[in-house]
Image (tube, rainbow, N blue to C red; front, top):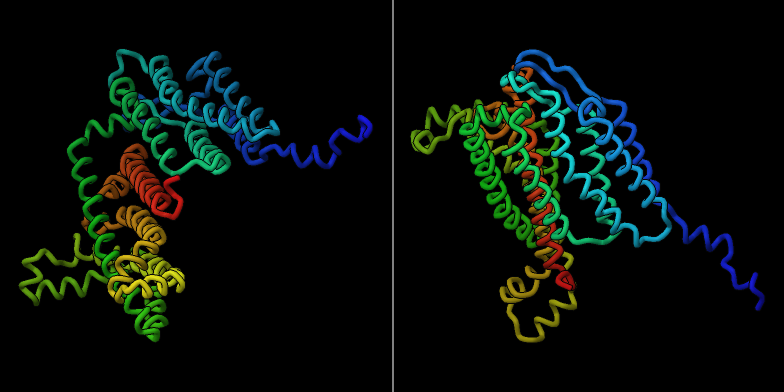
Length: 399
């Protein structure tokens, strides 16, 4: 065999060399956004609209060059043909996320005068764009490397801890931090209300969902009616459903003293909880039903041959095997409830949505972020934790 025959063919080289087009495009988007839009804004007080500053004005030429080199490094690693470079790419993305709060600290030091205690540093369009695209890059690299959700959750927890430390000790001029400091008690009360309402709705929907799914398996005719009703509830807008519950619950509270003594009324937690349970039932029932049906008949026959009775087969065989898919339903239900609970603030249920609607009414976007960002963080934490638990419970998930 000649030397020419031993060389790989052009088609084999093309198959081996496959740059990641997604990461290349995302790196280009971050580079363009960082140089095209305002990185931060500075306002003399809470009322006046802030003035935007680009990357060079905010962090200087050295900072701008460092940011550009990080984005160029991501693009170069995405262009390389070997998948080994995804680990290096994960390191560059993590480093960029860790450096981002320090960029805000540098901008605040340069742009906020020491004799202006009311001045506020706002986060600009470029900063939000880069942060969002970086998270997309992190998801892409995680999928390429096949990392478990546990690793992703631990990574995000470490990055979030550093961001919190920077906000607590070095970002007092940041408008979002000032909004939090001015409303610290209200924030923690709203956070606890949000978590309690979501936990109650998800807990009730899990119990009702399992009962409905088991009834649907026993009585097949119930399946069409139940899924039809639950699908219909999903089509009703959340605000409309909250409004539809006001009148009947107010009537019940006025005519049934026992319900009024329990706190049931046309506004507040009662209509919010009922609406959240109604929206949560469809994903819970659907995943539970599918999870129970997907257990193989051969496994159940083997359990029956071992002398297990019907209740034993359900609790010791069917339910443990169905648990990973069932947990996926709990994950979808919980993430959906976390977002919908924000709307419940409009009917007096409290929660983090209170800051969102107050901020919209006062045209204070930092107050809106004070309510919206914790909701996003809660959703990410719940999604990562329940997703990781479902992966661990699957056969071979512990390996």
